[in-house]
Image (tube, rainbow, N blue to C red; front, side, top):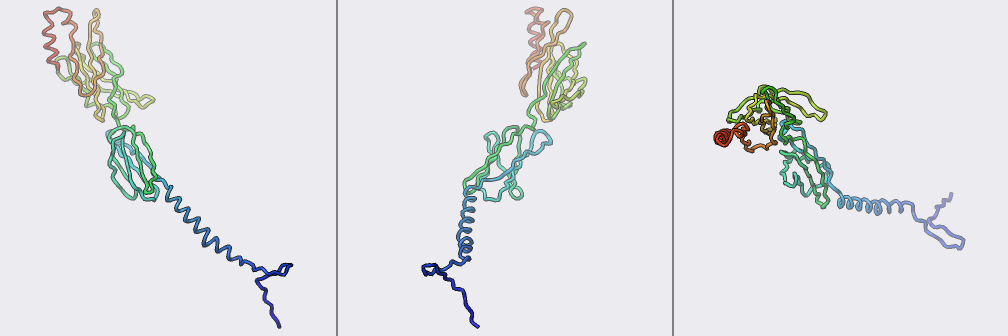
Amino acid sequence: MEYYQRSSYRSNRSGKKFRQRPSGDTSNLFLFYILPFLVFNGILFYCITATPKLSLNIMETNDYLTTEASMVIESWFPTKSISLNMDGEELEPEKGKKRTYTVPITRNGVLKATVVNVNGMSTTIFRHVNILDDNPPAFEHATLDDGILILRVTDSQSLVNPDSVYATDSAGQQRQPLSVERLDTSADNTISYELTFEMDLNGLHVFIQDKAGNEAQKTFTTHREGTLDVLEVGEDEAEGEEPAAAENPEAEAQGESETQPAEESSSAAE
């Protein structure tokens, strides 16, 4: 029995023979040349253009004085530098587990975080910090009723500290409030309080602090209109300012001879 093997050559009509390319050659070209080329260039492109992926979160505060920012680098690419600053002031982050960094925050402002990869690509994100209490309570309304000074004050964050409320009279003596009562809460979460003091008609200087230690001061005086004592409200004063000396309108009205005692009373108040 005779066996015939098909030749890899085939003839055309002119009698010339051509060699057929094996189908495996195309697969080898793709597998060993084209695919490695694509993979290598893809990796190279990624290494050149990879940017850091990070998240920046502001933690809750317990005392309205301090909080903490947490930054997590979510990409695995090696980093070249890490920068955190608050309103242009550089902060020193503390490294935690894995690729987590924390930094304490002691004031409100804009926190900026910048991470630079070893390939020079960088990412910058911003967070606005506004949960710390750096505003003092506000005097909203004042009335005088039968010798009693009634004040309405508000605070929107750490709230008024009732133990911090007091006043000094025209003689420089400290007076405690007759009452400190918490009232209602407004739609913007502002809490109102009503404070009452026994009024010194020659002047009363009131001090109020919130629970974060921010202080507000205001001076209240009176003048006579007929038989009525009319309340006068001074300007808001910043913490640390010396209270203005209380004036005595009655002493001024009685002439130059009584001006000196009034000045002595003002000195005592200071």
